[in-house]
Every structure is written in structure tokens, then in C-alpha cells.
Amino acid sequence: MSDSGKPIESVVIKQIALIILICILVGLIGWNLALFIPSVLGAVTLYIVCRRYNYYLVEVKHWKPWLAAFVLMLASLIVLILPVYFIVDMLVSKAANMNAYLDRFNVFLEKIHQFIYSKVGFDILSKENINKMTNFAGTLSTKAVSTTFNTFTVVISMYFILYFMFVKARLFERTVVKAMPFKRTNTQMLGERFNKLVIANAIGIPVVALGQGVVSLIGYSIFGAPSPMLLFALTAVASMLPLVGAAIVYVPVGIFMIAEGSTGPGLGVILYGLAVVGLTDNLLRFTLLKRLEDIHPLVTVFGIIMGMNIFGFMGLIFGPILLSITLLLMQVYRDEFSDEDAPPPLQLPNENNDRDKPANLIV
View 1 (cartoon, rainbow, N blue to C red):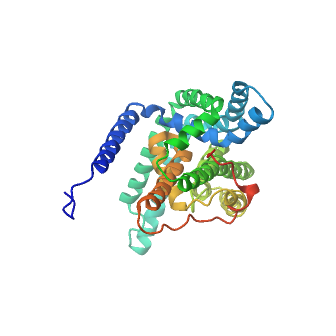
View 2 (cartoon, one colour):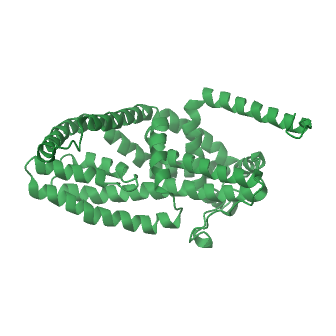
View 3 (cartoon, rainbow, N blue to C red):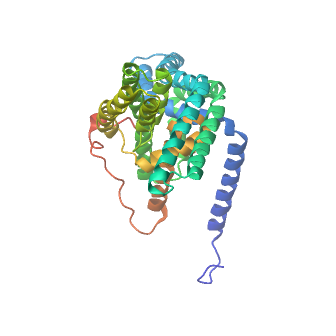
């Protein structure tokens, strides 16, 4: 019985029962096919990135769908997948050297801790907090690396799914649109924002990371930093983190070099990082990323932590996307079912510029 004393309508009961049944079935499918979730996310990401080129080859150049799919899959493998794979492989292969440097740096950090404590009598860098941070970083990196060992299986199944998306592109998009339980306007808005989020995470963030990694590699080589290629990979990954970014790598490296007696080169690494690498970061973020999608830094930070926990290094891209989509779905839910008028989606400065607008997923 409802609060007004009237019985609940049978239509509402059927809707609730159907929603519960759908949730149970989706949960069972997700639980048993969890291994392929990264493959599906990767396939959807690559589809959105290559979508306009697929339609151009098939509908303008009149290529066979299978040929266009094969060419785009090969191009995405060379341009997007292999560079990420080589960076991850470098990190894994250099893990032993990285642990050795971390052990030496921890000894130096403990000396700083003892010096500060002896001067001020206040435990600023408590050993307990340092151990917690070290254990958290070690656990996260270990899980990320272990999850990444399944990369080959993920990539093969991802391209298997992507092939059928490309070959039956129009059918795939119509099926997605019809499956959306939202109003047409919300479906359109969801498609546009989803495109922007995917492009920003799959293209913008890796380009910024690679740019900072290359620039930092030049600095590491000039000032004689240890294992410059390892530091290049670490800097590229760290640059994806907002606020701290690449500084979380080059500042400790400079301090480590100073502690080892290389005062001039150590200061050079820090100053080079703050000036040149920092300038590169600002230029790329305020030119490239601002033209794609303005993702909140907290979404990026927590998305990366969540994504790496679930998907390994692939979570650097998938994590922020999933978190952003969750927040976007909450906005859509409010617009669909709230009695109040939902505020319109935020308009970015370039959203109304047609030449900057990515192709919509909605047909």
C-alpha cells in the first residue's frame, strides 16, 4: 500500500520486477565475463577514436567494410597500442633497478627525517606515515603490473570485438541508441559527452604524457640521471596525475642525485623539470586538452587509482572514463526522474565550435 492508501499500480510493480531482473542478469554476466570488461572498454574506446575514419573509408571511398576495419585496426595497433605496451614493458623489465634506487632513496629520506626531528623536535615525516605511503604505492604498482600480464589476451579479444563493431557500424550504433532507457535529448547529450570524454582520455592525456616524457628524457640525458629510459617511462606515467604530475619523479631524482654527491646535475634536473617540463605540461594542457574536454582533476586522480586497481596500466585511461560516465549518468537520472528542472549540461568554451566538435555516436 502507498502512503495515500491506494494500492501500487501493477505497471509499477512490473517495472520494478523487470529492473531487478535486468540488474541480476547484468551482474551475473559481468561477474562471469569480468576478464573481458577491459576488452569491451578498449574496443569501444578505439571505435570512437576511429569512427569517423571508418565511415569515410566505407561510405565515401566505398571500401569493403572488412578491409576498412583491418586497416584501422592495424593503424590503431601501431599508433596507440604498441607505444603504451613498450612503456609498460620497460617499466616491468626495469622493476629490479627501480627497487634498488627506491631502497637507496628511502635511506636518504630517513636521514632527512632524523635531521628535521633533531632540529625541531617534531615528527613531521613520521616513519609510520612513510611506511603507509610506501606500502600503498608498492601494493598499487604490484597489482597494476600483475594485472597487465593479461594484456595479450585483452588485446586479442579487444580487436575481435572491434572488428564486428567496424563491419556493422550503423547497426551497432542503432542498437546502442535503442537500448538507452532515456529521452532522446538525454541520449544525444550522453553520446556527445561520452565522445568528448573518450577522446580526451584516449588521445589527449597520452599525448601530454608522451610529450612530457620525451622532454624529460632530454633533461635526464643532459644531466646524467641514472637509468634515463626508466625515468622517461615513470615521468610519462606520472604526468597523467593532476597537480603533482611529473614533479613526483624529477624532484626526488634531483634530490637523490644531490644526496649521491652530484649537486650540480641534481639541481639541474630539478630546475630543468620545473622550467622546461612544467612549461611543456602547461602548453599541452591549455592547448590540446582544453579543446577536447575539461575533466576535473579529482575525477582524474580517483579514476586513475580505481582504474589501475581494476585494469592495471590500462586503467590510466579507463578509470577516469568510468568515473566521469558515472557522474554523467547521475545527471541524466536527475533530468529523467526529478520533478525539478535539471540544469543544462555545462557548455565548454569550444563546445559550439563545429570544427572542434567530435563526431557523435548517435545516428
